[in-house]
Length: 491
Ligand code: ADP
Ligand code: MG
Image (tube, rainbow, N blue to C red; front, side, top):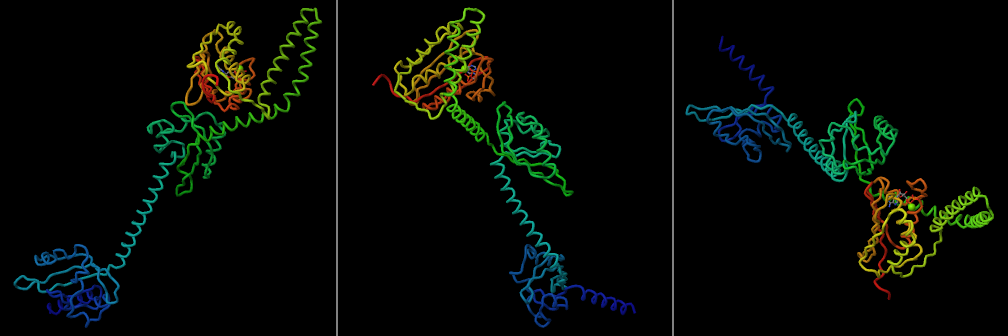
């Protein structure tokens, strides 16, 4: 009864196993002795085709990984082997089976047969394969992203802030241009590089734009740690979280300081030429009535005996002279400008100007020290124009030294250029105003007109020369003029 019952149970187990599991018996030489229905189904062979055939998995082309490595040793020592095997079906397609190999031993403890119990895991393996591929693709696209990031890092100035404006990242280029260390930025805001050039509204508008989730583009003037200024073309991109609100802002910038400098230069020369044209139109018109005014004022003054009234006429004459002088300065800019350059000895021009200013120099306790390599340096110029330039420089230097001092004038030949340098010990000009020198009407003097340097720049430009100004507050000013060199001694 018990044995009948056990047999029944065994049959049930076999039935249940048979209908759910892939089973095969393989002999010790690798030949298939038995294959169940499930085995036939998955391998797509019929029973007759399988029995007596060598099980494919013993064929080396189907051995995967380390599964069969040491199989015999492992099995003959009585171990059950488990693993995943990729097998080829009759139609050439592949399937994956999770396999347990159970060796059966004879009395000599030699494996005479193996039972292969397998479950189909093809779907799981396919999913795994797809996952692997996706991961690989992801890795590749990550690499691409990394490449893009590296390229961006090399070429751009980058900073990332959170929504409160606190800096979370700056790249090397950002540190380089701002001259700050990375530590000085992380966790802080960008206030320290604010140049105060832009209005509060400018930055309000910027933040409003990015907070709305839009990209902001514009030009920003920043201040580096050493106090110098730099301009950047900026693009600020907001990044969004899953809820659709910005969580960080990435700012990508490019250095446009040189472009900005060029723009300022262009603006200056445009202003100059606009004023030049205007001057051409009106200078002569003013000169004529001015001559009449001057003539009659002199005449009336000579007829007058009242001392008080004579004082008024003198004042009138002084003012007329002032207008005359300003108009004269403007006429230098008038177009078309005819300029007759002549090879001229330079040093005598300088000494003549000094002589002309002698009384003014004495009055202000200023001495001129002329240092030159050679007394016979020649340049090509229109003498009265160059005189006007030197006169303006020396006058400005005198005015910068109310308590007196020395003006050094050095003349050197350098790279086929004659370099004339005026150095004073005066009050100098603040650094941020140096770039304004030469702009029409820029003056820091109560009675100045801000035309002198503008005229100097224009004249030197007409002589194919250059002016370079350096100044330090309360130390002095150095003006370098270079003109094309035209040899030594009279030809
Ligand atoms: P003005 O002398 O009428 O003011 P300029 O064009 O000659 O006009 O000079 C413009 C400004 O440049 C001056 O007001 C002054 O601030 C500055 N400047 C020129 N030369 C010197 C100098 N040697 N030292 C200090 N400041 C100078
Ligand atoms: Mg002046």
